Image (cartoon, rainbow, N blue to C red; front, side):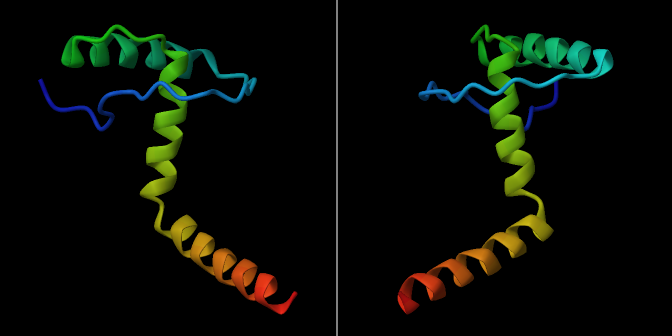
Length: 82
């Protein structure tokens, strides 16, 4: 079996966010949780996968990384000007 992109899921203090998922994405999320559990030996609630998936997506999005660096520079410059 191929290695999944997500590794172990950290247990951090959550922030509640309510989202509506299309049924097909929900089914895939349930299946992903099942496959993840088989690979890691760690049964996991599918809802716990959403945050790491989003984090991984954002971490690998080059356009977002560039925009974040630009915004961080702007914030640092603004903070120094005060």
